[in-house]
Image (tube, rainbow, N blue to C red; front, side, top):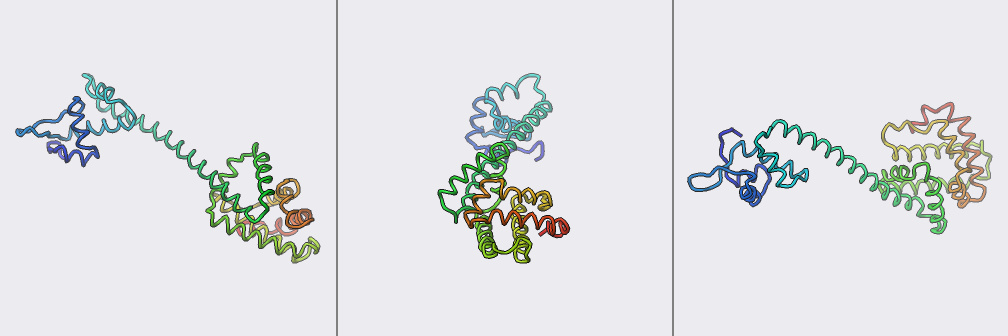
Length: 268
């Protein structure tokens, strides 16, 4: 806009995104006084536009009109310093808003995570699921329940359903080979499928810089089959003796397959 270009009240309204009624009010209280044409109509210029921009910013920062008027119309008003002050205030507001957005996103992810947890347990008896949920909340209270649920919230409901279906298919196939030794080919092939399934699940939960389940990580999951009461009871729900068999088969797989082929398996 050229410094000498004149604007009507409606034109300034469109440029600044401020209603004509608001501009009339600013004129009335002396906050933004326009020039007057021979016909008495309000006329604005570049100086008015810059001043209005500052008013709008102060209003966004929740300054009262009286305070804005005092700032902008004081005799020693320094426009550059005012702009610097506004910039500082806006950056602080941006930081606060960013933290609020992150907090909201985390809360939304937690709510979504709870929904997905219900989907993952949807084929299991409701009474047991309620008990396991309580146990999970108690067990993860000190280890970051919010973080766990927030991560689970990364999944869409459809993805959670797919994961649940894949797990059920795997469980059904594993039950059929429970009578076989843990080092048998069918069992070890099933454990490999289990590793790939869990690895893919974690990749969806932690999409940023996920490197796959390492040797120590899978050993920890192996230990939790028996040490974690929810995991233990869940596998035993599917078939008595499954938890112990699965634990031993996973330990055998870790020592005899995963450790030697970690680089190729963890990317699956």
